[in-house]
Length: 79
Image 1 (cartoon, rainbow, N blue to C red):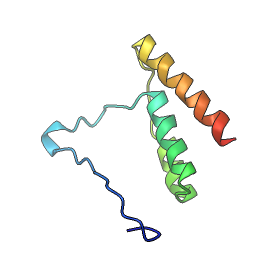
Image 2: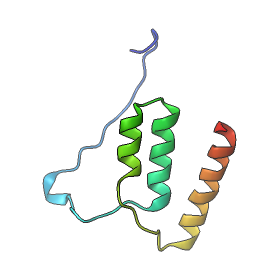
Image 3: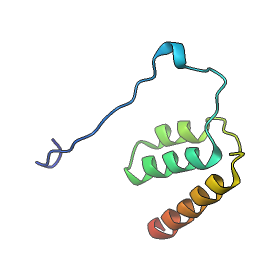
């Protein structure tokens, strides 16, 4: 409960055998998560820790462009 409202949510916990230590998120994904943390007013130190994560370029051009456009829309909306 938050502000006397109930919310449904879910969490994802990776099983240890499926964790790849050197796997990096795509740049667009990291930016999306950081924007969400900032929007939700998470502590600056937490948002900074997201930004500090190494990320890589998404090799699939269409998916990358689609998410980059989404990021632009979100930034326009939140600015």
